[in-house]
Length: 226
Image (tube, rainbow, N blue to C red; front, side, top):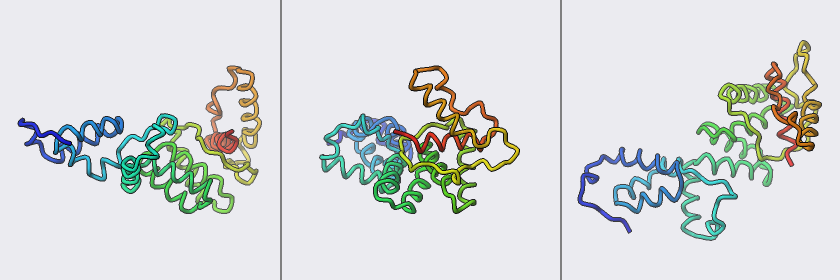
């Protein structure tokens, strides 16, 4: 049920309502639902695809369990997915990659989510491309994505488990690089330090000047997640 109030809100243009609704949608689903129940203009604005694409999707541990059983909630998430919500695209990409083993479909979904500004999807995509041992062009694209994340300060771990890394997957190939080939040792050192709760567990490979070696370190972390 919506309530139409006799006030100036009736004269607010639809594009303004849409902008307001997008802003609210990025806060939470509950906030969006509350706004849409406030008046007909807000309700109609909430029907736009761009609103469903912008909705903040809570992490799985913060999502009420009954949402997966509620038909109305399911229709809402299906609508968000169809509109290209980057968080839902990212989660579905992981299912395609590591459950259904549909690599091409998964990569396409990671590309879509990454193009909409999803940092974790961009990180996962960079890792997947750099792990391709039969395509140097794709590996270079992965490294460029990694460079962009590094420049923006967005490098972070990923909650994705990958197969064991092999030597041919490594990124750094410079014979002049003094840290080339040492990233597995650094990763193992950090891991053991973490088991001892040592301060040496922190920092990852941030002190390494070679960005390709830093990418190799992140590949080690990416494929060895528990």
